[in-house]
Image 1 (cartoon, rainbow, N blue to C red):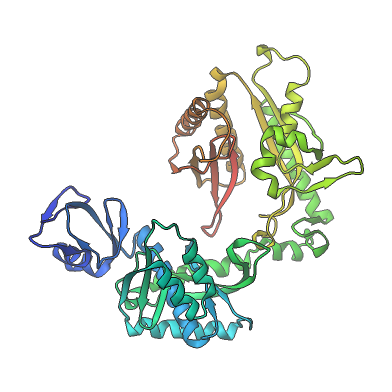
Image 2: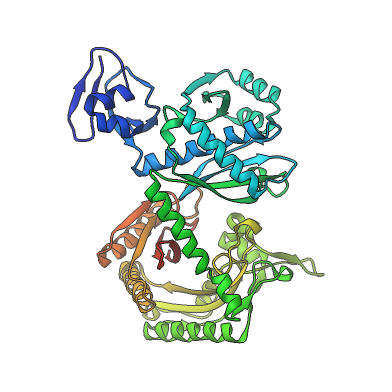
Length: 485
């Protein structure tokens, strides 16, 4: 019979198989009340799942990070159920948890209105009050496809048909609503609670492809309790009051218009501020022994193929072909230009480290839905630098970059800086030995700062690992800014 080892190393023995709910209850009534799921040997499972063998088990509570993500995922399912009850002709597609909330994409001919969102949210509260039991079921693939097609849910049928044949097809039933999901989920809709709110509407292409149908995305936020929800909504109100796009108009700094989507029209006052920032950065870089260069905005396709950008980043590049049948690309990054400058002429080891800096204008095609004021654009000036050095100099140079970056942030009042370390992605260039050396150098650099960092496995660039510097603003929002890679 199962021997269950808990996170503190203690063990509990049971004469018969036991569910996660029963395990939590055996530990304490408070834990049983807060439990939303369990982690069995590293895998998240429903509380109703039976524990039949020896295992290491952690009870996931609603106020934990994993528990909060599960609450938000369930909120998306409850929203989908509410939409189907109110607007039966609507097709449901996908509805994941995201940072601070959730969304669900719907296919519906008639646009949702703010009044519809109020009705959907009210019905969600009703579904929570019903406390519908949530049950996991495994279905035969063909039966599941046929079921959703019969329901008029073509998108769900398409998703199921694309699931690898060796993976089970799991559906979750709550009341009369059935949805495709790998889980886990709460034991019942009542466990979600009422600390949620629908926030906005947006458009989204099916599977993120602009060639596909446009869907309607409904966003919401969900929290473990009403206090957290209220704090978040207050933060959102503050963010709207401080919205830089609104301030830019009010202070006559800049504007955007459809003739140049994702590009900034700087007004005299805004451009003066911009130039002030450039002057400051130029001074700091000169003090750190960087030499400023400038490279072309448009370069031949062959250069981008050599650098690997064409293969890995080509879908984000603006490309044109001239009358002589040559293909050119506006640079999305400055890297190949800096390498070209370094390679020009003879270089000696005595020239190293050779530190180049450029305020280069770059162009990147970002989907229109991803654009956000000055923070996510298609054309911008990148304060960029490259360091050419020996292997022996690598770690010390990385340390100095960290010191410089953190010093600059302090000058602008950013003391709360979070650092993320991202290592090699699955799709990459270069030999593993070189990746090992680069990753070790970055780790040494960040550890020299004495700051804590988090680990983002597989999130490095295709050409190297990176450190991401994340700044927290005056109202607690995080923004990923500089990188060292």
